[in-house]
Image (tube, rainbow, N blue to C red; front, side):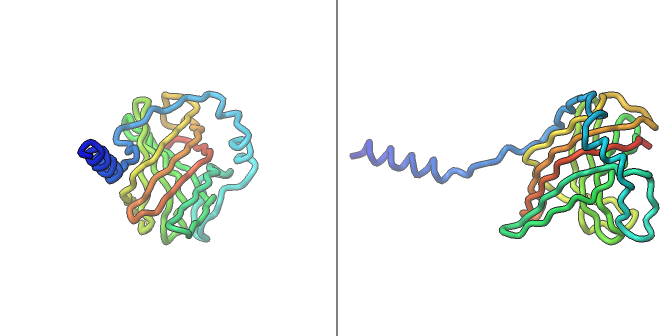
Amino acid sequence: MRLFSLIFLSFILMGCREKKEKVISCYEKVVVDEDLVHNDTIRLLSKFPELRLFKKEKLESKTRTAYILQNSGLLNFTASFDNYKCSAEKSGDTINISLNNYDGYISNGIMIKVFDGTFRVHDYDPKTLKDEVKFIGAVPRYEILHLNKSDFQKNDSIFGYVNYSCVVKGGVSKSMQGYFKTKIQ
C-alpha cells in the first residue's frame, strides 16, 4: 500500500510541474544562402512599386522592399498584415535590418541586429511615435534568418528570408515569415 501511495504521489507531483517552453536567450546563427538573389518572391518584389503607408511618406525605394506575412492573435482574435517595408543600416560591425509598417501613427514589426554571423530579433513597440524607436518585451519561440552573404559593407544590397515567432508582452502571439531586400545605408 505504501509503495502504491508513493508512486501515486510522485505522479501527482510530476503532473504539477510547470512546463517551460524553450526560451531563446542567446544569439542565433545566420544561415548564408547565396541563391536568395534568384528567389521568385524577391524577383517579384522588383516588379511592384514601393508601398506608401501614409500620404506624406517619403519613399526611399522605387520597388517594394519586403513581403512579410504576419499573423498576430490573442485568444480567438487574430489579425494578419503584409504591408512591410525593409531598411538596413550599418553601425560599426552591426547591421540593423528594420522590417516595419509604420503608418505615421503606430508602428509594427521587428528589428534584426546582425553581427559576426549571429543575429537577434527585437519587436517594435506599437506605441512608437514619429522618429522614435522603442521596443516591447517578447519571448521568442524560434528565430530563423537567411541572408545572401555573411559580410556586408555600406551600399551593399542585402537579400534575406526571416521566419520568427514570439509571444509579445501581454500574451499576444506573433509570427512573421517572408522575404526582404534593400540597400545598406
